[in-house]
Every structure is written in C-alpha cells, then in structure tokens.
Amino acid sequence: MHGIHRLLIPTPFAVGTVNCYLVEDEPLTLLDTGPNSGKALDELERALAARGHRIEDLERIVVSHQHMDHLGLVDILARRSGAEICALDLLAPLLEDFAAEAERDDELAETLMLAHGIPRDVVTALRSVSRAYRGWGTSATVDRRLADGDRLAFRDRTWEVQHRPGHSPSDTIFWDEERSVLLGADHLIGHISSNPVISRPLGGRSGEHDPERRPHALETYVASLQLTRALPAAVVLPGHGEPVTEHAKLIDERFALHERRARRIGRLIAERPRSAYEIAQAMWGTVAVTQAYLTLSEVLGHVDLLLSRGAVVEVEADGLVRFETAG
Ligand SMILES: [Zn+2]
Image 1 (cartoon, rainbow, N blue to C red):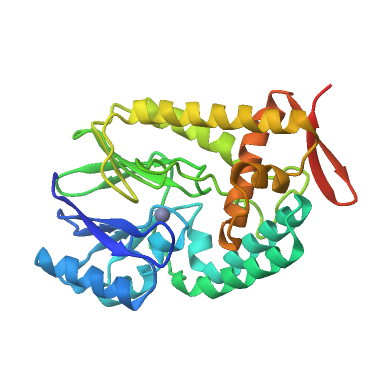
Image 2 (tube, rainbow, N blue to C red):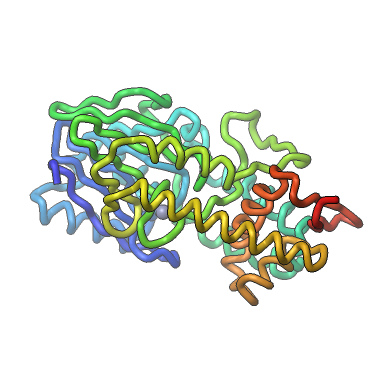
C-alpha cells in the first residue's frame, strides 16, 4: 500500500512475528528490523529479495522504540548497507549503550517486583532470563536524532514524527498526513492490547529514577492514545498483526477495557488490602516467570488510575507495598 510493504520477521518472543515496513521511496527505508538473530536476518534478506532489494540497498533505517524485537538487527543492517539510522532523540542514548541501559531497566524492575510482593526466587529467575535474552538487542550509533514534531522527508512523502510514550517511554509513531497513513508500531495493535511496561523515564540523568514516584506507564499511555485518537487516520500499520482501520473505535474499546480492569482491581482491594502480586494472582492465577514483570506493570498501571482518583491508597510496611480502599 502506497509503496509500503510489510515484512514479517520471526522473533523468539511470545508475540510471534514482528512487522517491519519497507518503504520503496527515496531513500529506500526500513522501519524496524526484527531481533538480532540469524533467523530474523535470513528472513529479512529473503523478504527484501522478494521485492528485488538487497540489504546493501537500504539507505535509511528508522527505529520505532526501545524493544529488542524492533531494533535487534539495526547495527548489522547499517554496517552492511551504510544506511543512516534515525531514532527519537530520547531513544538515541539508550540505543547507543543498549546492554548497560537494559541492565538499569532490570534494576528498576527488580526493585519494583520485590516491593510489590513478587517472591525473590521468581525475581532472580526473571533477572537471568532477561540477561539471556539481551543478545537479541544491540547497540548502534544513531545518525539522525528525531524530535517530536520533526518531519522526515522522502522523495514522494513526508512523515511527521510523533512521540507517544506509554507502551515504552520511547514509542514513536510516523504520520503521513497526505495519505492518512499512520505507522504506529506497538503504540496501537489490533489483536492485543499493548502492555504499558514500567520502564525508566528517558531523558533524565543516567540511571536515575525517583523510587518515591514510579513511572505511571498506563496513565502516560492513555494520554498518548487520546492524541492518536484525534488523528484522522484511514489506516494504522502496527508493529504486530494486521493493519488497523477504525482506530478511534479500537482506542475506545481499549479505554473501556482499562476501565473494567480498574474497577475489578478496585473490588479486589475493597475485599481486603492486597499487594500488586496478590492482585495479579487473583486476576490471572499463577503466571509464568517470564510474564511476572509484565503482569505487575499491568496491575500497577490500573492501580495508578485508582490512586489518581483517590479511590485507593498505598500503604508500605516492612518493605512490602499493599493497596487498600481509601477512607
Ligand atoms: Zn513489539
């Protein structure tokens, strides 16, 4: 569609394949790369060849956000092609020192998991899983730092860069106003509701976060979705799954889902004070180790909505945080 071709690249993650988009324009551009694996590289090479291109032909690589399934091959592809790497200015420092930044994210995750009742053996196991996974990411030097509101020009089109934090702090979407096409990456996915993962805020001093105020990822995400809802997009091309039409309707469904979950969590807390881990267990039963932090992020995101409304309060005793009904 409009010279944009979806390349389905395999990932080792639960999400399955990732959508990378080849833009046949000048410069020849790839949005997102797939994870850093031989399998992903083979498949990308094959998908490019099917359209008559080689990796060496790529002239520009754009990275949508900080997750490994989207950026893992960026360094290898840029080295082979000489393509310029474009990414949000706030994402650039993270991309340039990926392993160290990922380690700091894991430190935040560990602190939060222990404070919210996740057993230490689960936390330790998840930390080793995360280290083992890290090779699917990469570091790379960003050639062009994009600011929110910048325009990325091609011969036949222009993309407006829009920062939409929430799913991750660096989520960036690209808006082709002329064609009403939005390249949305993981900001909006049709078949799954994007999880707002609690991550260190970008742009602060290196490694710094305020333990007294954890990032409110879901609230940030909701504000971003409201901006996206207002765009007159005919189609959203997401980071996973099929193109999304009627994005405003989908966003409204997501808002309704957030509201239902927040109410359900409010009822669980009304029964008795609970930690976020206890809430996650009540909602989803025993969750896989690899999902422990994602479900914690999900619960805390919704608890944040209740905290902001003054419906619940946070009580800490002996290093464990519990939530109880206000008043
Ligand atoms: Zn993704």
